[in-house]
Image (tube, rainbow, N blue to C red; front, side, top):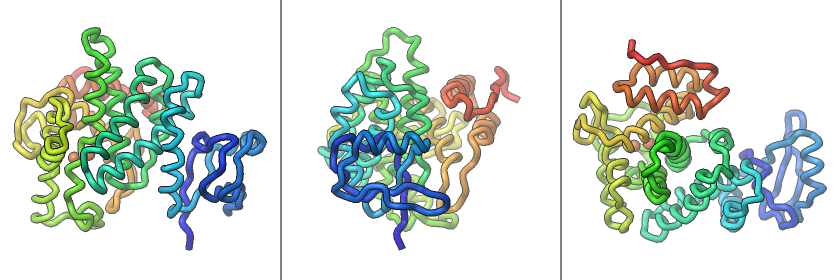
Length: 325
Ligand SMILES: [Fe+2]
Ligand SMILES: [Fe+2]
């Protein structure tokens, strides 16, 4: 039986051939909207608009073809100032999941370079306010895979860093770019972990945990071997599982670089609010509350406040008090 995935209509190009069959939901079933090879026209978009349809469905097994199609337009879409923010956000999301997936399948120099190429125009748009962080936040998907996780954490952590460092006039765009690459690649070391461990439904055994905990160091070596290791990427890959009280791994250090701490908060929030093979998703409000209870430093609380502001209505008026309770 075919499995279908929703995709934002914003990524389908007007006056271009569709590379996959498109379906829309009608009552409780999916009906064909445009066959593969058919031209998607303004009239099609008008029809969908009239019924308030924001998502179309594609077969799961055709998702790679769709991602490649979106990717082939992404440069143009992301660098065109007249394209609306939500179209850019949707295009960026699909292209970056595609680029990260390819890098995880085979983490070589060119594939990591490709991630950088996808991220760059997006960061320029974020800094110029051509893409709203709220549009990026609302586009995140939660089908669990290491690369969807990487992209979601990349988006959350980049947004936190952009907002957090905005007041710092000395930070340059290149530094933000290096931070962002580090966030999207924070778990690249997991590409060396067997899928039987990554996708395990039950608890990991002691031996499996030993392997899992190697991913920060493996990430560091991959980045070094492929010539993509910057100071920022080194801190982020090595320290994103360290904790200020020394309870983290791999080294149990307490003096954690702030750029890695940003990654940790984004990483924990993403892990709590996404579906995993062994758990359902937590609501944003509950996840934020849990992070607040376990926040170890004033810096963590500052980051949490920023995250709440960025999440807007999703955070449901949550407030973070100055003093830890
Ligand atoms: Fe990790
Ligand atoms: Fe992670």
